[in-house]
Image 1 (cartoon, rainbow, N blue to C red):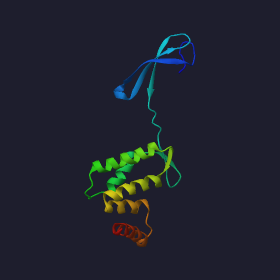
Image 2 (image 1 turned 90 degrees about the horizontal axis):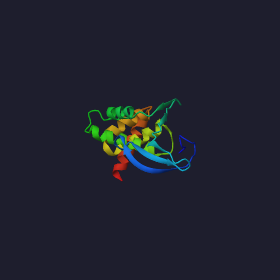
Image 3 (image 1 turned 90 degrees about the vertical axis):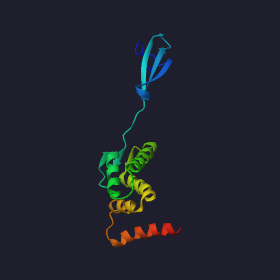
Image 4 (image 1 turned 180 degrees about the vertical axis):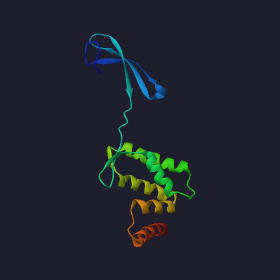
Length: 153
């Protein structure tokens, strides 16, 4: 950290304490050259996740958009809003923890389908029908067959 008084780049931390309900850390520093003291603040940087859509356009990840898609798939199904929010939290955590700052909408859809499959099969099929854009009844039946076969195993 550069000293604001003399510009020297070496300093030592004298005191550290959390501020703003733990969102930032306040550090008192002392310059190793001129011995003057100054304060710095450290915050967690949240880098936005950019979603690459099917048409190659880009937009910032919006958790509310994902949640509304899941809500539509779970309409009139016995799935609580808490469960859906947990799914969105898990997907958002997966995206934040990956090293990629850009992610395809297909990957997000795949994550959502994997999570829905364990929660409610009807909601899974509904979501898959929109996400995969089934062209005809045969492709829809193939997906249903996969579910039925996985239950037999």
